[in-house]
Length: 452
Ligand SMILES: Cc1ncc(COP(=O)(O)O)c(C=O)c1O
Image 1: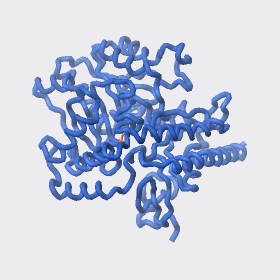
Image 2: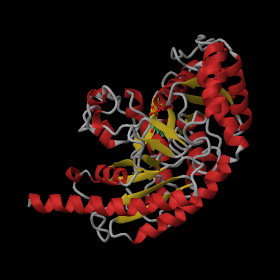
Image 3: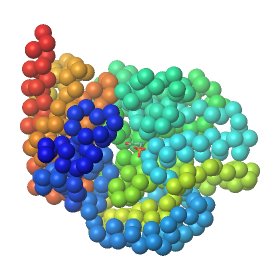
Image 4: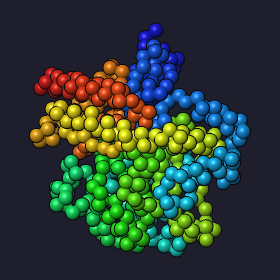
């Protein structure tokens, strides 16, 4: 039996795959283990999800007990696990002022719900004209039609545009290739001021909210804004009565070395969205947090926001509560900050690589941007599928890297390992990444030479 068919049914999964999918039989700590017993270092924590590491028995036990205790209960009812998680996450995790929460089944659902919440807030307050949600270029908020519409991930939106409501966009905070052709600090952070210009152009009375990732995720790879950026955005939103929505699906729950990335700038958004790290991958869950001021008009008007069937799943809530408890008990947010410095230090060694144009990030969310020519920043041809080649080369050396990028940041590898990663594993990860990039570049150049 070939390696590709070791797990029955593998040849038909997933339905749009190119070639044989990679098979994983088990996961443990920082490792994916194949049916043949190969241990593959998970440099991406899955899809930048697995913060406490894979395969913790105490989480699995909580999951099993919770499923037995309360199998399914409609989301508006309270269960013990829902109450415990609500208390923990609101009292100990989110920035002060966020006093309300609704749990969902993941990131896209949370963003979708946040967009509806923002709209409902204005509707209930008698401002029916406010419906637009301003987003940013080079952003990602999910793959449902509403989340693609507010996002700016060109590659993932491509072809679906006729189905997407046109939503205003502001330029990305992408200093490496500034879309405004300015440079920091002389730019005066014009990409933040662009929000005000956009709100004024659209008409403040039509804008419900502005949504952004505090530190960009995998679209352009771990984009960290200058320190003035988020305070400026918050001020602009306040001035025009526009709700500030921070999408922390990738950055939340410690990933960037603080509980939430907005904590780097002491910001409390009106609405905060978290997914992935809430359960560290042990259960599909997300959350929408809001201030009292956001929810108040909805309650006063007697309005409601419809839930998803599996919102606040009792076993998912029990898992999330346990995962947050582990993060607290083992001081893993602090560890993400400390190991992030180690990762940054090791990645700097790749800065000399002829195809690594930029190294950026915060905590255990970092990225490298790859180009064909560092002097002109010319990217590789799309057909070269460079990041896929890096991932394949990494897997051949037993490390899994997360591919990202969307034009103009075409080829990006994002690193987001579990917070329990060791220094030795970071060394291995970065050494393999350097070799994987070289091997992918050689294959891409050979392909170009053969085609010409
Ligand atoms: C910032 C951000 N928002 C939303 C999403 C969508 O989350 P999900 O894939 O869980 O639907 C992602 C996923 O990567 C993300 O990074």
